[in-house]
Structures are given as C-alpha cells and as structure tokens.
Image (cartoon, rainbow, N blue to C red):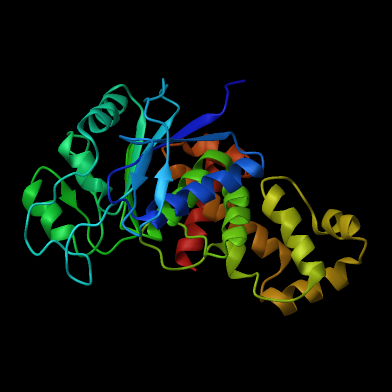
Length: 315
C-alpha cells in the first residue's frame, strides 16, 4: 500500500494564521481518524512572521514529493483597508521565490496544488493558474483578473477545483476546500466526521450554501437516530435493509422508522438514498465513470445510477 499522502504548506511572509491553521487542522483531524495524511510546513526561515504577530515555526528544506502529494499556499495580508483589499495595486507574491518555483515544479510534474485567499497570486505568479478557472478573496478578485488576464476568475464562490489545481476564497473557505478534498480522497462519511469535529458545515461543492445530507439532518437530540445515521453514513453503499439496521440497533423496525422520521423528516431509506446521490455527484465531478460510481455507491450498474439521478433532479 502507498504511504501517507503529504500535505505541504508553503508559508509566505505575513501569512494569515487561519489560512494555515484551518485547513491544517482539517487534514490533521482526518489523519487522526485514519486518513493517510502527513503534514509538512516549509518557510523561507525557521520562523515565518504571521500578520497576527505569532511566529510559525517550520522547516526550510523543500521535501521530496511525489504526484500523490498536495502543496497548499496560504494567503497573506495585502492591503491597508479594513477589508484587506489592494486598492487597485498589483498584488505581489510574498512567497519566497525558491518556494514559489518549487510549487510550480510540483505542479508541472503532475502534482496537486491549492491556495487559500491571496495564495492564488503566488500560484498565478509561477504560471500554475494560466488558462484555468480560479478564485480568491472577494476583495482581491478584480486584481487577480486585472494582473493575470490568462486566469478565468470565478467570483462569489467558496472554492474552485480545476483539475489538480484548487483555489479558495479566503480565511474559513480554506476549511471548506480541505473538507472537499478529504471527501474526495476518503469519502463523505469521514469528511463529515471532521466537519462535525470542527463544528463547521460540510458543503457539497464550492457554490452550494447548503449543508451536506449528513449534517442537514443532525440537528436533533435522539441518540437512537444518531446511532442509525452513524451506520448509514459509513455504509450507505452497502445493501443494508431496514430490518438489518433495526437489528443492529436492537429495536424494532417500527420504532426505528418512527424515531427517524420524527427527528429528521425522512425515512432511513430516503436518507440512505440521499447519501448515495450526494456521493455519486461528488465522484462524477471528480472524473469517475458512471459504472464505477454505481458500484461505489451500491447501485449495481450505470443505468440504475442514471435513473436515480434523473429522479432526484425531477423531484
């Protein structure tokens, strides 16, 4: 089996702490839950000054990476106005030149890269965003479009994924992007556990303001229903009947159904179906074939998947 996937944070001067700490804690928590992530922090000096005044200690040697590894460039303080905007000035990358070159080399070698907030300007400076869709903090979007015209800037979204390049709007949206990548790598059940641990909503994609199915129906106090949801979240692709689920929870089918509907507004079967639809859309957006997605979410074949997705769109 392959070893842990490295997540390397390339730290710019004046870095915003939450741009680093948010996604770092999401990946770290995922690792504690069994996901194979190994976090590495690299700066131009042993201590990188943050905008908030706290120094961030990191290594100074760029690690040996493979295509499996992810490089993240957090954002930094840009302007003098309260909203952090640049007032029309070009945004200069505060990532050390040799670190920027290493990020570009990783990308050209087929590796995955991501940015938070102004980190998009560091990616643009080394050509990573040429010809791609990308986003950044709302106060900086006009500047990204003005100074890097080869980039298609997408406004008013949490994050944008374009192939192996991911950009997020800034600050807390770095957490949203991290959760998206965790869900893609290890499934939505683990990503939802991380989101619950961070006390943040789990989002389906960069434009969706809605909570995920898993968290959408968790605002209740029924221990029985939470335990049932834990099973369904982890095994939604299995052929798990209502009788099997009730047996595992040591209750009758009638009791389980009544409690589930009272707490969530849907039956266990409809909840399981919603989980399958959500994960199927995530996998299809990541380039999986319909046949592979159908097998992964427990639908058997591509025809069943197409029918389910069509019915969900029509309803």
